[in-house]
Amino acid sequence: MNQSKITALFGGTFDPIHCGHLQVATALATEVGLDSIQLLPNNIPPHKPQPRATALQRLEMLKLAIQHLPLFSIDTRELARTTSSYTIDTLIEWRAEHKQTNTLVFIIGEDALYTLNKWHRWQEILNYCHLLICRRSSPSNIPYPESVKWWLQQHITDDITHIHAKPSGYIYLSNTPITDCSSTEIRSKIAQGKNCASLLPELVWQYIEQHNLYR
Ligand code: ATP
Image 1: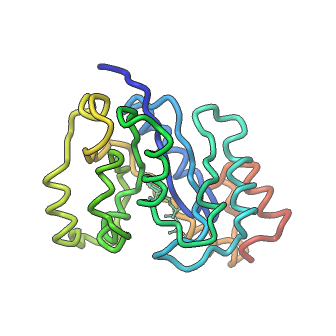
Image 2: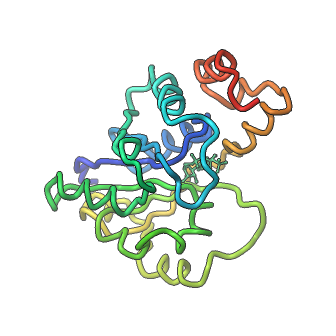
Image 3: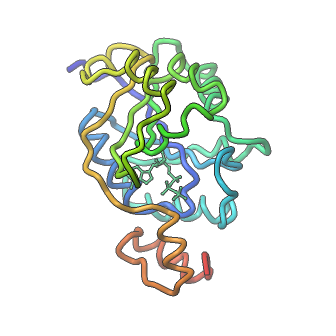
């Protein structure tokens, strides 16, 4: 395989970051051949309720989570914005800072496909990056929206060499193991006084306890 240098962005609210995020991203890095992954915390998620923890707290938890994981770093550009965190804006900004020939991948969980057609200028995303999709259990067998299904068919590849050969344009559905873990579930368990140590990086769990978050 031509191991070109790839930049990988993994966007999310990370409210809080949990073991599911880290496990799937690590498995994906091995599967696709990614040297590094930049976690991209959003400031104002456009399609979700506002985060419970502050931007600073979410950032602190990300720092603690990746302290001993050299695969990961953090891109804080969306936290610096005061407007909605539209992925397309970030991709355009990244492209303006890098050569057109550099490869960029954007990582999302499979559940995001159900609402992808609500993302701002979603059909333009592949002009700037490849989309790598981590498998995730879905609550039901609801099919993706028709427009997303059609778009997937047009751009999907199961050949990793395609990702390395072009700077953008493909969708790759990974074979990463399904990890049943979500921030929503964690917040709700903590609110019920349950212990979530097994679902979170140790230092993140300690931080949540110390700051009495999600109670
Ligand atoms: P919430 O439950 O609050 O919606 P979340 O657990 O989905 O949060 P986010 O920070 O919104 O976490 O997720 C960032 C990205 O990581 C999204 O693309 C999401 O689909 C993906 N993701 C989160 N958890 C998993 C998981 N367990 N397996 C695969 N992908 C995941």
